[in-house]
Image 1 (spheres, helix red, strand yellow):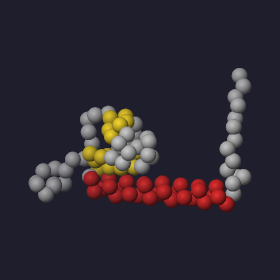
Image 2 (cartoon, helix red, strand yellow; image 1 turned 120 degrees about the horizontal axis):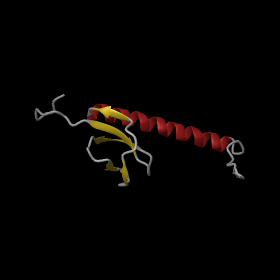
Image 3 (cartoon, helix red, strand yellow; image 1 turned 45 degrees about the vertical axis):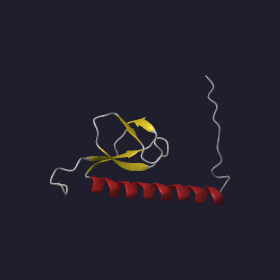
Image 4 (spheres, helix red, strand yellow; image 1 turned 90 degrees about the horizontal axis):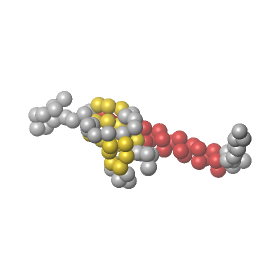
Length: 95
């Protein structure tokens, strides 16, 4: 794939921030560290959720963030309508 300047476009990765939990597209780098463009958190590259052109990765990021948002809304709705059902339970392990 050629860019407007005639060169090849840099490959991109789909990454997820460990702090703000948002997916984002970043240009592929040799470094094993990257910075979140939303919250600025510097972190190790743990998992690549997708690879491809910038356009493809941006589309995938939109889809993943949308699905994540829908899942969080569903959990919040369920917690509001059934608060006893989602109570936090503590487990004590005895050796």
